[in-house]
Length: 178
Image 1 (cartoon, helix red, strand yellow):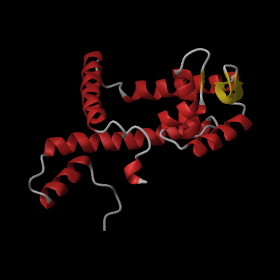
Image 2 (image 1 turned 60 degrees about the vertical axis):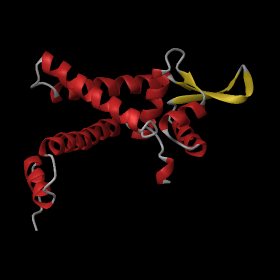
Image 3 (image 1 turned 180 degrees about the vertical axis):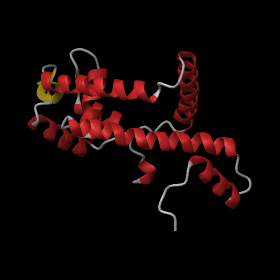
Image 4 (image 1 turned 90 degrees about the horizontal axis):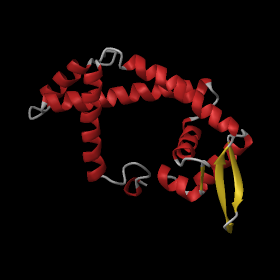
């Protein structure tokens, strides 16, 4: 048995051998995107680990930054955006509090609720991740011209919109897979 993963073209040839109705162009695009996603996730995971962050912590920091100044959200809002249960969100926030990445304060407008905010340390970690990711991403796309980058971005965005329309719940927790 071969120990190495088949190349993309070899994989498509194997698929065609086993399933003759296969459209090789479709499979090449889908499998290339899948392989690229897997490798990018590994690279991003290594960058996060080098900074002492986990991917789940990064997700929370990203949501807080995307909320804009003053970089605060209710935990339920973060949980919904990330597809988490409230209990999982509480556990994640508890860990991040011990690392001084986030704050948890009573909502002054509703004393029953709490608000999660990003600390200076959390924001600095977010910025460092962004710096490292920018270098990686620029290197990844170095062989593409500006026009090719625009075209690739437009095409992938079009595919993403189609998937988001067909499966609007696929960005978070999939209840049908629980």
